[in-house]
Length: 91
Image 1 (cartoon, rainbow, N blue to C red):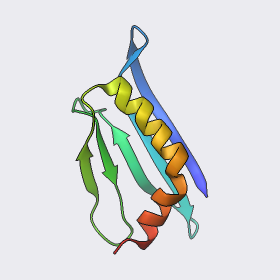
Image 2 (cartoon, one colour; image 1 turned 135 degrees about the vertical axis):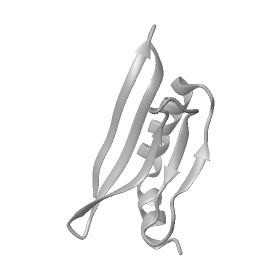
Image 3 (tube, rainbow, N blue to C red; image 1 turned 90 degrees about the horizontal axis):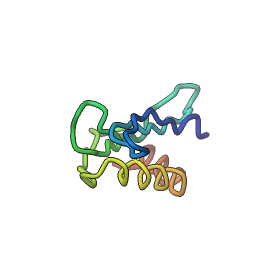
Image 4 (cartoon, rainbow, N blue to C red; image 1 turned 180 degrees about the vertical axis):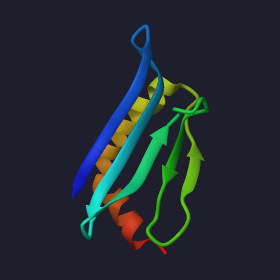
Protein backbone atom coordinates (compact mmCIF):
# COMPACT_ATOMS: atom_id res chain seq x y z
CA UNK A 1 0.00 0.00 0.00
CA UNK A 2 1.34 3.38 -0.96
CA UNK A 3 1.42 5.60 2.12
CA UNK A 4 3.28 8.67 1.00
CA UNK A 5 4.98 10.22 -1.97
CA UNK A 6 5.81 13.53 -0.32
CA UNK A 7 7.76 16.48 -1.47
CA UNK A 8 9.37 19.26 0.48
CA UNK A 9 10.85 21.78 -1.88
CA UNK A 10 12.39 25.24 -2.05
CA UNK A 11 11.78 27.30 -5.18
CA UNK A 12 13.57 30.30 -6.64
CA UNK A 13 11.82 32.00 -9.58
CA UNK A 14 9.48 28.99 -9.96
CA UNK A 15 12.42 26.56 -10.26
CA UNK A 16 12.98 23.90 -7.64
CA UNK A 17 16.45 24.19 -6.10
CA UNK A 18 16.16 22.06 -2.96
CA UNK A 19 13.85 19.06 -2.56
CA UNK A 20 13.11 15.68 -1.03
CA UNK A 21 10.79 13.01 -2.47
CA UNK A 22 10.04 10.06 -0.20
CA UNK A 23 8.20 6.84 -1.01
CA UNK A 24 7.12 4.89 2.06
CA UNK A 25 4.90 1.83 2.27
CA UNK A 26 3.03 0.01 4.99
CA UNK A 27 4.41 -3.53 5.17
CA UNK A 28 3.34 -5.88 7.99
CA UNK A 29 1.90 -2.96 9.95
CA UNK A 30 5.17 -1.00 9.82
CA UNK A 31 6.08 1.95 7.62
CA UNK A 32 9.23 1.38 5.57
CA UNK A 33 11.13 3.93 3.50
CA UNK A 34 11.59 2.33 0.10
CA UNK A 35 12.97 5.17 -2.01
CA UNK A 36 14.21 8.71 -1.41
CA UNK A 37 15.27 11.22 -4.03
CA UNK A 38 16.73 14.46 -2.71
CA UNK A 39 19.33 17.17 -2.59
CA UNK A 40 18.10 18.59 0.68
CA UNK A 41 21.49 18.68 2.37
CA UNK A 42 23.21 20.79 -0.27
CA UNK A 43 24.37 17.95 -2.51
CA UNK A 44 23.85 16.99 -6.13
CA UNK A 45 20.43 15.36 -6.58
CA UNK A 46 20.64 11.66 -5.83
CA UNK A 47 18.45 8.61 -5.30
CA UNK A 48 18.54 6.24 -2.32
CA UNK A 49 17.06 2.83 -3.13
CA UNK A 50 16.41 0.75 -0.03
CA UNK A 51 16.08 -3.03 0.23
CA UNK A 52 14.58 -5.12 2.98
CA UNK A 53 17.56 -7.47 3.28
CA UNK A 54 20.56 -5.56 1.97
CA UNK A 55 22.21 -2.15 1.97
CA UNK A 56 20.79 0.87 0.24
CA UNK A 57 22.07 1.90 -3.18
CA UNK A 58 22.81 5.58 -3.80
CA UNK A 59 22.88 6.91 -7.38
CA UNK A 60 23.69 10.43 -8.58
CA UNK A 61 21.08 12.05 -10.83
CA UNK A 62 20.89 15.12 -13.06
CA UNK A 63 22.74 18.12 -11.64
CA UNK A 64 19.62 20.19 -12.32
CA UNK A 65 17.44 19.96 -9.19
CA UNK A 66 14.29 21.07 -11.02
CA UNK A 67 14.62 18.25 -13.59
CA UNK A 68 15.60 15.69 -10.95
CA UNK A 69 12.51 16.60 -8.88
CA UNK A 70 10.09 16.37 -11.81
CA UNK A 71 11.64 13.18 -13.21
CA UNK A 72 11.75 11.60 -9.75
CA UNK A 73 8.12 12.38 -9.06
CA UNK A 74 7.05 10.82 -12.38
CA UNK A 75 9.30 7.79 -11.79
CA UNK A 76 7.74 7.06 -8.39
CA UNK A 77 4.16 7.53 -9.58
CA UNK A 78 4.63 5.30 -12.63
CA UNK A 79 6.79 2.60 -11.00
CA UNK A 80 5.61 2.47 -7.38
CA UNK A 81 4.71 -1.24 -7.50
CA UNK A 82 8.02 -2.25 -9.14
CA UNK A 83 9.91 -0.15 -6.59
CA UNK A 84 8.09 -1.85 -3.71
CA UNK A 85 8.65 -5.31 -5.19
CA UNK A 86 12.36 -4.51 -5.58
CA UNK A 87 12.48 -3.53 -1.90
CA UNK A 88 10.77 -6.73 -0.79
CA UNK A 89 12.28 -9.34 -3.09
CA UNK A 90 15.81 -8.26 -4.05
CA UNK A 91 18.49 -10.52 -2.65
